[in-house]
Length: 314
Image (cartoon, rainbow, N blue to C red; front, side, top):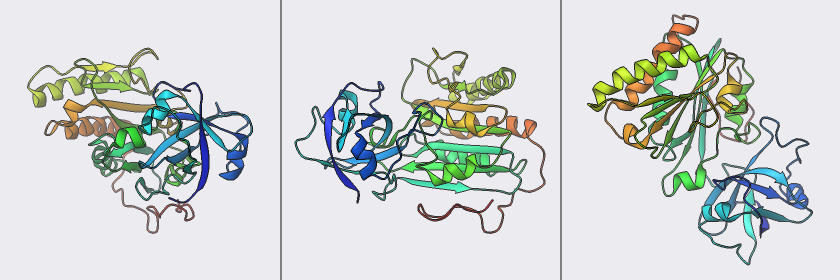
Protein backbone atom coordinates (compact mmCIF):
# COMPACT_ATOMS: atom_id res chain seq x y z
CA UNK A 1 0.00 0.00 0.00
CA UNK A 2 1.54 3.30 -1.07
CA UNK A 3 0.59 6.55 0.61
CA UNK A 4 1.98 8.77 3.34
CA UNK A 5 3.09 8.20 6.91
CA UNK A 6 1.16 9.82 9.74
CA UNK A 7 1.29 9.64 13.50
CA UNK A 8 -1.71 8.40 15.45
CA UNK A 9 -2.81 10.56 18.35
CA UNK A 10 -5.32 9.72 21.05
CA UNK A 11 -8.71 11.42 21.13
CA UNK A 12 -12.31 10.70 21.98
CA UNK A 13 -14.08 8.32 19.62
CA UNK A 14 -16.25 10.12 17.10
CA UNK A 15 -18.66 7.18 16.82
CA UNK A 16 -19.33 4.06 18.92
CA UNK A 17 -18.07 1.66 16.24
CA UNK A 18 -14.72 3.40 15.87
CA UNK A 19 -15.13 3.90 12.14
CA UNK A 20 -14.59 7.67 12.21
CA UNK A 21 -11.34 9.56 12.74
CA UNK A 22 -10.07 13.14 12.62
CA UNK A 23 -7.14 14.35 10.53
CA UNK A 24 -4.74 17.15 11.29
CA UNK A 25 -4.78 19.92 8.71
CA UNK A 26 -1.30 19.00 7.47
CA UNK A 27 -2.48 15.41 7.01
CA UNK A 28 -5.23 16.61 4.66
CA UNK A 29 -2.58 18.33 2.57
CA UNK A 30 -0.28 15.30 2.52
CA UNK A 31 -3.13 13.06 1.39
CA UNK A 32 -4.24 15.66 -1.19
CA UNK A 33 -7.69 15.78 0.39
CA UNK A 34 -9.76 18.95 0.60
CA UNK A 35 -11.01 19.96 4.04
CA UNK A 36 -14.82 19.87 3.75
CA UNK A 37 -16.51 23.14 4.70
CA UNK A 38 -19.28 21.01 6.22
CA UNK A 39 -18.56 17.48 7.41
CA UNK A 40 -22.31 16.99 7.78
CA UNK A 41 -22.98 17.37 4.06
CA UNK A 42 -23.87 14.11 2.25
CA UNK A 43 -20.79 12.47 0.75
CA UNK A 44 -18.35 14.91 2.36
CA UNK A 45 -16.80 12.41 4.79
CA UNK A 46 -14.20 10.58 2.71
CA UNK A 47 -12.73 7.17 3.41
CA UNK A 48 -9.05 6.36 3.97
CA UNK A 49 -7.01 3.22 4.64
CA UNK A 50 -4.71 2.96 7.64
CA UNK A 51 -2.10 0.19 7.99
CA UNK A 52 -0.22 -0.05 11.27
CA UNK A 53 1.44 -3.32 10.27
CA UNK A 54 -1.48 -5.70 10.73
CA UNK A 55 -3.26 -5.02 7.44
CA UNK A 56 -5.20 -2.09 6.02
CA UNK A 57 -8.32 -0.85 7.83
CA UNK A 58 -10.90 1.53 6.34
CA UNK A 59 -11.90 4.65 8.24
CA UNK A 60 -14.08 7.69 7.58
CA UNK A 61 -12.56 11.15 7.96
CA UNK A 62 -15.25 12.89 9.97
CA UNK A 63 -13.44 15.90 11.44
CA UNK A 64 -10.44 18.19 11.06
CA UNK A 65 -8.19 18.62 14.04
CA UNK A 66 -5.39 21.06 14.71
CA UNK A 67 -2.35 21.34 12.48
CA UNK A 68 -0.05 18.37 12.24
CA UNK A 69 0.60 15.24 10.22
CA UNK A 70 -1.61 13.18 12.49
CA UNK A 71 -4.69 10.98 12.69
CA UNK A 72 -6.66 11.26 15.89
CA UNK A 73 -8.68 8.27 17.03
CA UNK A 74 -10.24 6.89 20.18
CA UNK A 75 -10.18 3.48 21.81
CA UNK A 76 -12.80 1.92 19.53
CA UNK A 77 -10.99 3.17 16.42
CA UNK A 78 -7.68 1.87 17.74
CA UNK A 79 -9.33 -1.46 18.44
CA UNK A 80 -10.05 -1.85 14.75
CA UNK A 81 -6.26 -1.82 14.29
CA UNK A 82 -6.04 -4.42 17.10
CA UNK A 83 -4.27 -1.86 19.28
CA UNK A 84 -4.88 -0.55 22.79
CA UNK A 85 -2.81 2.60 22.36
CA UNK A 86 -1.24 4.60 19.53
CA UNK A 87 1.91 3.01 18.10
CA UNK A 88 5.19 4.86 18.67
CA UNK A 89 5.99 4.96 14.95
CA UNK A 90 4.02 6.56 12.10
CA UNK A 91 1.59 4.38 10.17
CA UNK A 92 0.86 4.08 6.45
CA UNK A 93 -2.19 5.98 5.23
CA UNK A 94 -3.73 6.38 1.79
CA UNK A 95 -6.84 8.10 0.46
CA UNK A 96 -7.14 5.35 -2.17
CA UNK A 97 -9.53 2.82 -0.61
CA UNK A 98 -8.43 0.28 -3.23
CA UNK A 99 -4.75 0.93 -2.53
CA UNK A 100 -4.18 -2.32 -0.65
CA UNK A 101 -5.59 -4.33 -3.60
CA UNK A 102 -8.15 -6.00 -1.31
CA UNK A 103 -11.36 -3.99 -1.35
CA UNK A 104 -13.13 -4.11 -4.72
CA UNK A 105 -16.17 -2.44 -6.23
CA UNK A 106 -18.31 -3.40 -9.21
CA UNK A 107 -20.78 -1.03 -10.83
CA UNK A 108 -23.09 -1.87 -13.70
CA UNK A 109 -25.05 0.85 -15.47
CA UNK A 110 -28.01 0.14 -17.74
CA UNK A 111 -29.63 2.59 -20.10
CA UNK A 112 -32.89 4.08 -18.81
CA UNK A 113 -32.54 2.38 -15.42
CA UNK A 114 -35.09 3.52 -12.82
CA UNK A 115 -33.91 1.27 -9.97
CA UNK A 116 -30.61 1.22 -8.08
CA UNK A 117 -29.54 -1.98 -6.30
CA UNK A 118 -26.55 -1.93 -3.97
CA UNK A 119 -24.61 -4.09 -1.52
CA UNK A 120 -22.05 -1.82 0.19
CA UNK A 121 -20.70 -4.61 2.40
CA UNK A 122 -20.44 -7.62 0.13
CA UNK A 123 -17.89 -10.39 0.05
CA UNK A 124 -16.92 -11.46 3.57
CA UNK A 125 -18.05 -8.23 5.26
CA UNK A 126 -21.75 -9.15 5.34
CA UNK A 127 -22.00 -12.48 3.58
CA UNK A 128 -24.68 -13.24 0.97
CA UNK A 129 -25.64 -9.59 0.46
CA UNK A 130 -23.66 -9.22 -2.78
CA UNK A 131 -25.35 -12.30 -4.30
CA UNK A 132 -28.74 -10.87 -3.33
CA UNK A 133 -27.98 -7.58 -5.06
CA UNK A 134 -26.88 -9.38 -8.20
CA UNK A 135 -30.02 -11.51 -8.18
CA UNK A 136 -32.32 -8.49 -7.93
CA UNK A 137 -30.42 -6.33 -10.42
CA UNK A 138 -30.46 -9.06 -13.08
CA UNK A 139 -34.26 -9.44 -13.07
CA UNK A 140 -35.74 -8.70 -16.47
CA UNK A 141 -38.94 -7.02 -15.26
CA UNK A 142 -37.25 -3.66 -14.68
CA UNK A 143 -34.01 -1.90 -15.51
CA UNK A 144 -31.58 -1.57 -12.62
CA UNK A 145 -28.17 -0.07 -12.06
CA UNK A 146 -26.08 -1.82 -9.42
CA UNK A 147 -23.12 -1.17 -7.16
CA UNK A 148 -21.43 -3.83 -5.05
CA UNK A 149 -18.42 -3.35 -2.80
CA UNK A 150 -16.66 -6.52 -1.58
CA UNK A 151 -14.12 -7.09 1.17
CA UNK A 152 -12.04 -10.26 1.57
CA UNK A 153 -12.05 -12.55 4.60
CA UNK A 154 -9.84 -12.26 7.66
CA UNK A 155 -11.49 -9.78 10.00
CA UNK A 156 -13.53 -8.41 7.11
CA UNK A 157 -16.19 -6.60 9.14
CA UNK A 158 -13.64 -5.05 11.48
CA UNK A 159 -11.40 -3.96 8.62
CA UNK A 160 -13.77 -2.90 5.87
CA UNK A 161 -17.17 -1.93 7.26
CA UNK A 162 -18.16 1.71 6.74
CA UNK A 163 -21.66 2.71 7.77
CA UNK A 164 -23.95 3.64 4.87
CA UNK A 165 -24.52 7.15 6.23
CA UNK A 166 -20.80 7.86 5.75
CA UNK A 167 -20.06 6.30 2.37
CA UNK A 168 -18.61 8.96 0.10
CA UNK A 169 -18.82 8.94 -3.67
CA UNK A 170 -15.50 10.81 -3.63
CA UNK A 171 -13.90 7.56 -2.41
CA UNK A 172 -15.90 5.10 -4.52
CA UNK A 173 -16.05 5.96 -8.25
CA UNK A 174 -18.65 3.24 -8.92
CA UNK A 175 -20.99 4.71 -6.34
CA UNK A 176 -20.37 8.16 -7.81
CA UNK A 177 -21.49 6.86 -11.20
CA UNK A 178 -24.79 5.62 -9.76
CA UNK A 179 -25.45 8.83 -7.86
CA UNK A 180 -25.12 10.80 -11.07
CA UNK A 181 -28.11 8.96 -12.52
CA UNK A 182 -31.64 9.76 -11.31
CA UNK A 183 -33.45 6.69 -9.96
CA UNK A 184 -37.01 6.39 -8.69
CA UNK A 185 -36.32 3.40 -6.44
CA UNK A 186 -33.33 1.93 -4.64
CA UNK A 187 -32.65 -1.04 -2.38
CA UNK A 188 -29.61 -1.91 -0.30
CA UNK A 189 -28.84 -5.30 1.23
CA UNK A 190 -27.10 -5.54 4.59
CA UNK A 191 -26.37 -7.97 7.39
CA UNK A 192 -26.05 -7.93 11.17
CA UNK A 193 -24.80 -10.55 13.61
CA UNK A 194 -27.52 -11.00 16.24
CA UNK A 195 -30.36 -8.85 17.57
CA UNK A 196 -32.40 -11.08 19.86
CA UNK A 197 -34.46 -13.31 17.53
CA UNK A 198 -34.87 -10.80 14.71
CA UNK A 199 -34.44 -12.19 11.20
CA UNK A 200 -34.93 -9.11 9.02
CA UNK A 201 -35.32 -5.36 9.52
CA UNK A 202 -37.11 -3.46 6.75
CA UNK A 203 -35.90 0.13 6.82
CA UNK A 204 -35.24 3.10 4.60
CA UNK A 205 -37.28 6.15 3.60
CA UNK A 206 -39.45 4.39 1.04
CA UNK A 207 -43.19 4.75 1.66
CA UNK A 208 -44.38 2.95 4.81
CA UNK A 209 -47.15 1.16 2.92
CA UNK A 210 -44.66 -0.37 0.53
CA UNK A 211 -42.30 -1.37 3.32
CA UNK A 212 -45.21 -2.93 5.23
CA UNK A 213 -46.03 -5.02 2.18
CA UNK A 214 -42.42 -6.18 2.01
CA UNK A 215 -42.42 -7.05 5.71
CA UNK A 216 -45.64 -9.04 5.50
CA UNK A 217 -44.51 -11.04 2.49
CA UNK A 218 -41.12 -11.72 4.05
CA UNK A 219 -42.79 -13.00 7.21
CA UNK A 220 -45.04 -15.30 5.22
CA UNK A 221 -42.40 -16.78 2.94
CA UNK A 222 -39.51 -16.95 5.40
CA UNK A 223 -41.68 -18.82 7.90
CA UNK A 224 -41.81 -21.65 5.37
CA UNK A 225 -38.06 -21.65 4.67
CA UNK A 226 -37.03 -21.34 8.32
CA UNK A 227 -39.64 -23.85 9.51
CA UNK A 228 -40.56 -21.46 12.32
CA UNK A 229 -42.27 -18.08 12.59
CA UNK A 230 -40.03 -15.48 10.97
CA UNK A 231 -39.51 -12.23 12.87
CA UNK A 232 -39.40 -9.24 10.52
CA UNK A 233 -39.33 -5.72 11.96
CA UNK A 234 -40.48 -2.54 10.27
CA UNK A 235 -38.12 0.30 11.23
CA UNK A 236 -40.21 3.33 12.09
CA UNK A 237 -37.88 5.52 14.16
CA UNK A 238 -34.20 6.22 14.62
CA UNK A 239 -34.40 4.32 17.90
CA UNK A 240 -35.01 1.08 16.02
CA UNK A 241 -31.95 -1.05 15.17
CA UNK A 242 -30.46 -0.34 11.74
CA UNK A 243 -33.41 1.79 10.58
CA UNK A 244 -31.84 3.31 7.46
CA UNK A 245 -33.86 6.48 8.00
CA UNK A 246 -31.06 9.04 7.71
CA UNK A 247 -31.29 11.14 4.54
CA UNK A 248 -27.49 10.75 4.25
CA UNK A 249 -27.83 6.96 3.99
CA UNK A 250 -26.64 6.18 0.50
CA UNK A 251 -29.75 4.16 -0.42
CA UNK A 252 -31.94 7.18 0.32
CA UNK A 253 -29.65 9.44 -1.68
CA UNK A 254 -30.02 7.14 -4.68
CA UNK A 255 -33.83 7.16 -4.91
CA UNK A 256 -36.29 9.94 -5.62
CA UNK A 257 -39.00 8.03 -3.74
CA UNK A 258 -36.77 7.00 -0.84
CA UNK A 259 -34.68 3.90 -0.38
CA UNK A 260 -35.49 0.41 0.89
CA UNK A 261 -32.91 -0.96 3.32
CA UNK A 262 -32.95 -4.71 4.03
CA UNK A 263 -30.98 -5.79 7.12
CA UNK A 264 -30.65 -9.53 7.78
CA UNK A 265 -29.38 -11.60 10.66
CA UNK A 266 -26.42 -13.93 10.25
CA UNK A 267 -28.51 -17.01 11.03
CA UNK A 268 -30.94 -16.18 8.23
CA UNK A 269 -28.16 -15.42 5.75
CA UNK A 270 -26.61 -18.79 6.63
CA UNK A 271 -29.84 -20.71 6.02
CA UNK A 272 -30.20 -22.40 2.66
CA UNK A 273 -32.63 -20.63 0.32
CA UNK A 274 -33.42 -17.84 2.80
CA UNK A 275 -31.26 -15.12 1.15
CA UNK A 276 -32.78 -15.95 -2.23
CA UNK A 277 -36.30 -15.70 -0.79
CA UNK A 278 -35.52 -12.25 0.62
CA UNK A 279 -34.12 -11.12 -2.73
CA UNK A 280 -37.13 -12.47 -4.59
CA UNK A 281 -39.64 -10.71 -2.32
CA UNK A 282 -37.81 -7.43 -2.87
CA UNK A 283 -37.67 -8.08 -6.62
CA UNK A 284 -41.41 -8.64 -6.83
CA UNK A 285 -42.14 -5.43 -4.96
CA UNK A 286 -39.78 -3.43 -7.19
CA UNK A 287 -41.32 -4.99 -10.28
CA UNK A 288 -44.75 -3.84 -9.12
CA UNK A 289 -43.53 -0.28 -8.63
CA UNK A 290 -41.01 0.23 -11.44
CA UNK A 291 -41.93 0.92 -15.08
CA UNK A 292 -42.12 -2.39 -16.97
CA UNK A 293 -39.43 -3.29 -19.47
CA UNK A 294 -39.03 -6.07 -21.97
CA UNK A 295 -35.27 -6.29 -21.57
CA UNK A 296 -32.54 -5.14 -19.24
CA UNK A 297 -29.49 -5.59 -21.41
CA UNK A 298 -26.45 -3.65 -20.34
CA UNK A 299 -25.64 -0.83 -22.68
CA UNK A 300 -22.62 -1.70 -24.82
CA UNK A 301 -19.50 -0.12 -23.38
CA UNK A 302 -20.89 0.46 -19.90
CA UNK A 303 -20.23 -1.77 -16.93
CA UNK A 304 -17.35 -0.74 -14.70
CA UNK A 305 -13.67 -0.09 -15.06
CA UNK A 306 -10.87 -0.43 -12.48
CA UNK A 307 -10.53 2.32 -9.88
CA UNK A 308 -8.59 5.29 -11.20
CA UNK A 309 -10.02 5.20 -14.74
CA UNK A 310 -12.64 7.68 -15.99
CA UNK A 311 -16.25 7.16 -15.03
CA UNK A 312 -18.08 4.66 -17.23
CA UNK A 313 -20.49 6.13 -19.78
CA UNK A 314 -24.19 6.21 -19.01
